[in-house]
Image 1: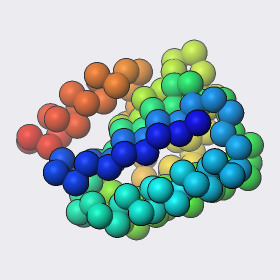
Image 2 (image 1 turned 135 degrees about the horizontal axis):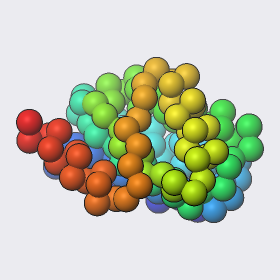
Image 3 (image 1 turned 90 degrees about the vertical axis):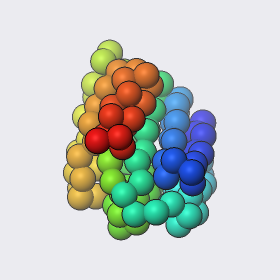
Amino acid sequence: MYDIRSNNFENHLSIIIKGKLELAEATQAAEKIDKAVKVLMSGFTVITDIRELVLPAENVRQVLLGAMQVMKNARLGFEMRVVNPQNMVTANRFQRTSRAAGYTAQEVSTINEAEKFIDQLVSA
């Protein structure tokens, strides 16, 4: 399951991915991300919540890598990634994938932490 929302006013993208993400869902999510970043301005921020995500299969990871590359190429400003400290295997896989896309996400364990960090970053 996934939920992707963009906020043009705040120049922000919110991504939630949970459960066992199948290839078809990952492809749909990647397409939504592609559409969302096209309406955001350079330097947009992202909060990605993967706390409840089951470690994805390699073909799904490749699709997610493509989505991360789309964000990077659209001039991603910063990504906060909300991870589950009890599931660092998934968190580490995502971090390696985003590094392969050309960036490193800041990891936190709650949405509140992510939002506070982004607010501080934007107001600085």
